[in-house]
Length: 309
Image (cartoon, rainbow, N blue to C red; front, side, top):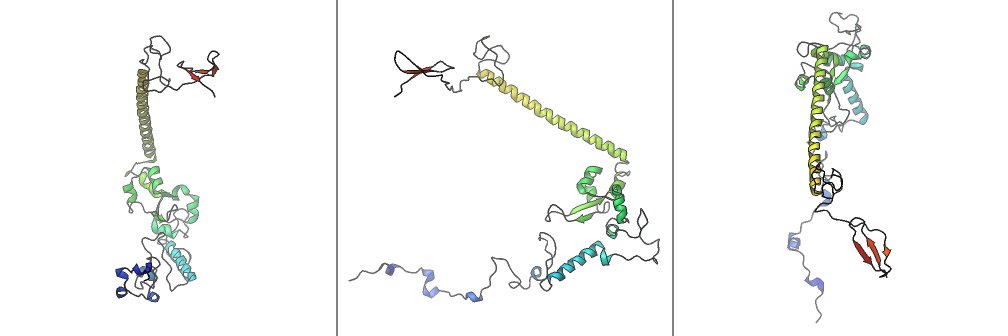
């Protein structure tokens, strides 16, 4: 009688038996791209189909809708930027029939070709030529520069009624908060008024006073660290002197006897009770009587004999 083969003892697991076998139709399955949904998987998703901007998007810009070509989408974005900047075809028209009393004109030269974006944000009518001509009045400052140059506080700079601001994308990274730009003449008008410092001289005096206080705090901190270093140095010198068997300044030498050597100072190499002596052997010399080679330690005088084969 033939013995059964090894495969006869192999049985399928219970959950893979014929009675519980499930056949899948792979052609009817949808590839979800590793869990990321597409427009075909979720046709009712507005973020996927309408092209609306998402708050979590890195650049904060809208995505191109599926029904628009790339050229149409670029033209749409260009028109959107021009409309926001009031430039190009969206720049307000200038006519000789307009009333001069109601028409905004440059506060420096009287020109009607003003920067309408600045006029809408800051409420200041000035042309581009005058902005470049008078940078000491019409330059833009960041929030940090406004705080450091005019000693303004964060609550004052957060007040949009007090200081209008022009927001631009952060040049460091698109994921950072938008950069806030303030107009210098508006900052100076508030800082030099009686509501803040009163005058430019008072601002300079306050700035000098804060610099003196900052220098005093820095010097005080440095002196405190220096005193702490001196204390730790004196303690270390005292410990090393005690290990050498002498107190600092008592005239006891490194050898432990009064007057027998120089006084232990900080930084000297001393022999303590826990120090390990390492021999410094001199040149090996052959002993004529025994014929062995001897070596002597230079520091402690210990001698050893060596036998060379």
